[in-house]
Image 1 (cartoon, rainbow, N blue to C red):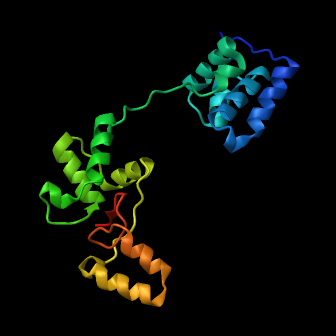
Image 2: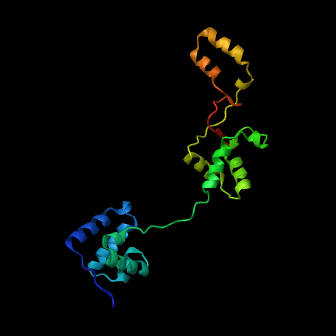
Image 3: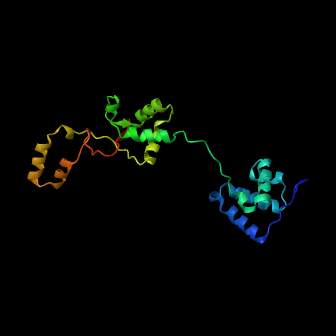
Length: 198
């Protein structure tokens, strides 16, 4: 032990618990390193020796020892960190849900489907919050929207009466059901947002 350093004494139960945490390796993360610091301290190693052997800063070793003295095993866990506040607030998400269900042509655009870059640009214009299109895709997925590639079709140009009479003659039940379902301009069922790639 170095000059002015208090020794750490461990009970048998504490030593076993610390050894279990230290042996768990990668899964324990920083808690495993902290457990090793406490075990080495209990064996009489100085803070400088522990820092050199484990490749840590002297301050980290001393702070870990202090946390052990005040909090025991709970002191080995990572402390809660607030993190950065979310950029996309509730207002942004509400607008995103509303816009993604809206046909872009109704908002004055010449395209029929939202892409993530187009949606990100529109939302930035409306809210002033800049998010990259990959992040917008993740937010859409988290909100329950499913992305799929747009398929070009001419279903919306076909005469429904002729189509119904053709499918009725062949007895194709699938054709009958499809003829009665509401369709969007790209031939897919309406009722969910269609997001296409750029």
